[in-house]
Length: 241
Image (cartoon, rainbow, N blue to C red; front, side, top):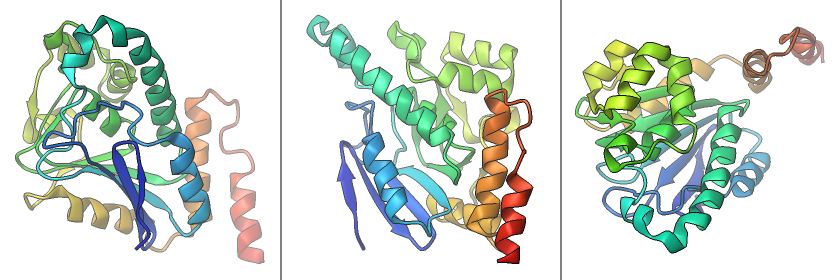
């Protein structure tokens, strides 16, 4: 198995699924907000054309507890943090727009930047004992990687505002009830069920079909006048050839 290491993550392909694992201590803290270099991720996917899905998980008991809050008080690092956050936002925008099925397998704590990563995925599968929240308000700051706007898009303004302002930590069941996650896994480790979930979605479809569906939805999010233009024809051409 060819495992790529970049920043605080590892990446490998398992059949048609790329698996990206956050690896940074017990809590998988985001000491590097750009947890994998964007170009490394894109190069890996380019070299593995069979991949039609991406699953993001955390090593060990937790997905990620987010940023190392001790960095917030170090004045000398504030300029660097700004640059790192911009790279992180660019990375999450890239993941959000990938023409692949994307899902986060969430075990344990998924807080702050960790939840912002999970929100860049199309689906979130959580273990029964997972806890989730944009908790930055409790540390005197606000989410910095696009989590607020993604949460608003997913849950609506009222609920997202309440969660951001209160820094609420939701149980897996509460997260499911409000629509923050897709489903709760039957087992304590969400990863196997998350893998099965993306495999079941992709089963029986060509990669081009998946790409065309996602490209259409991405075009719609970007405000394209005719989001699905040409997508049917691409698939039909493949069938005829």
